[in-house]
Length: 409
Image 1 (cartoon, rainbow, N blue to C red):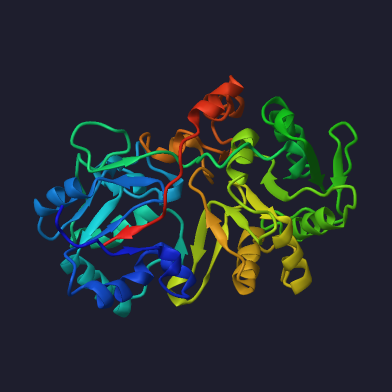
Image 2: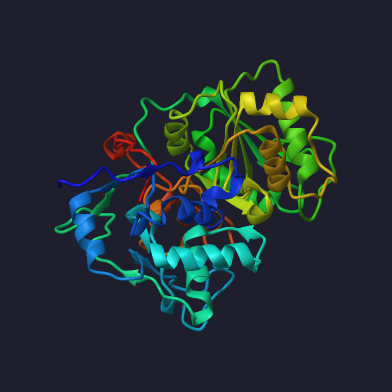
């Protein structure tokens, strides 16, 4: 296109700041470095493909804007704190798979706000929605402008397209390489464990149920940690220690889930083929706490927390642990891993909530790995509709090539 090569940046390489993945902490540095030479900042997912000439044509049509493929909630959603509950469809946010763009003048204003204002929440939970809310600024800033050329399904005139969040990295890891730990308790095990057994347990090679009581009919293992109403840090760290100490269990990966987590283990095993268990890895749905103030990231417990054996080794040898048995286990693990510089890797196929809590067109729903909670739903039906692959050959047909995670400016 007879123009210079665009500047391509990888978010994880921008700085030592753990919070750069949440975009807002990175904006002042991006604007300072590129604000004088660029007109737009374009953010994209690892698997998004760009037709650069078409993207330039699209961007030339807009002045100072916030652009993307528009998603909206179908109902008031817990993951968005029931925002716009009277009319959830009235607020739009971008699908990261299609890419989204912020003009440089808008980035300048956002950068100044970031440096002089405190965020309303310490938590980063659903990045696209929270970015859109921040830009909208309670009605004082621009809403997302829907751009039809930002696509997740190929069609005419697309400037971007999307492949899959479940890349083809070779054959899935074997069942014997993944140890599954299910957290349950006497209060819920009679209700929830039968759901696990009726759905995804049969896909597991190595699995144990951990409760506060021993029930031979399941069977459950008691770790000597009393059940707590919330947090469960004591139980989780006991699970981690048991996984490491069991001489007979030499699995490469530890998966920790709640008893009301629904998960596709075949899809997870395909994903794990993309990672090296000899490296320290923490994988799942990434949230953040206090990222603007040098906080930490963590993988959400309900969506499933995946740890490599090497990560478990580093965690236990560090001495990092719970400040109480009912501390939030996922956040404590995240704090420990951040301190140990263990990568906390996000994959959007893990979901902390139920399918109906997400926009229908969200790209991560197509090949979801997990969902969480049984509230007001039939979990067996949810599993069969969203997570069960009826024909094993379908998995190989769904595998597509991976891309690179880039920001183009």
